Image (cartoon, rainbow, N blue to C red; front, side, top):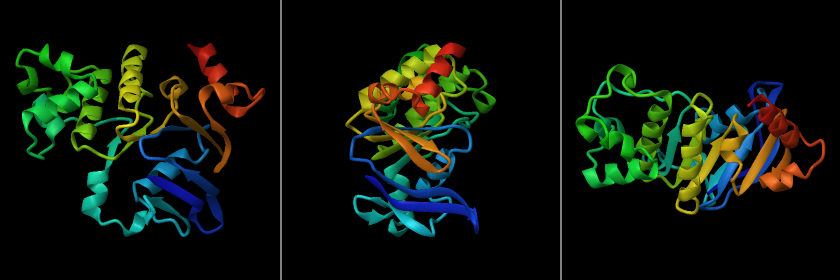
Length: 241
């Protein structure tokens, strides 16, 4: 699973975004990564997805440098749930399958794990129902559950969520929370989160601040740090609800 050793990165010389970041994530762990805008969490996700290579330090999966893993294995190992998923003007089944030719029972298993199965079967033609242009027939929350099912259908070892609950209603966010808790131990979950309630139950929450890890621990541990960054962020979000 991912190990980051003294990871430093900048988009241009002399402008570091991440500074000496070391982070170990064990197989089956559920880890949340949080921080203010500009803290470096999106940059860290981009490096995990190999959008950029890191000139200093390394990212390793099971002791193997990320850059050395061939593309086929990397795509098989990592599933991504983006903030704004794109849905095809196609059926629910096709939107989960994405051309992989998966059997129906695997598509349904992924949908059940994502808690999307029930609303799909309520559609007039079930899994064969067309979702409309860009999934226009579905709510924002339902689209996100389809995106989670799509990622899980690939049976990834690592599931990355990129602020996947930022734009959904709180009821669907609670469904996502339940789904992530049920997946704990089966797949390694790394959730970049703006909405802190999404990752409240994570095994560990890593708080980034100006490209460095400022705090790390469970929700309860971080809430006991009086005046800590996580505590302040969480209480501010609670007040805003």
